[in-house]
Length: 74
Image 1 (cartoon, rainbow, N blue to C red):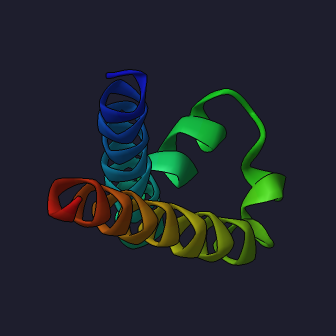
Image 2 (cartoon, rainbow, N blue to C red; image 1 turned 180 degrees about the vertical axis):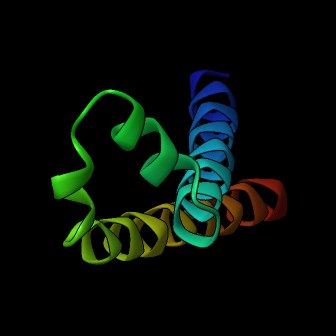
């Protein structure tokens, strides 16, 4: 049963991370927040970091779904 709990947690983290990274990538949420606290200068290279984070979390979600499918098949 520990494997099933791990798969659920992995899927949950992947989906939440994907949603957060997508919100910060495609909406000005992070730019507004950084501007509000005086760190607007950090927004220049932010796109690269967010795209990498989005790719990582999408990959994590796909991996979790693959593990779940494999576990259900056995």
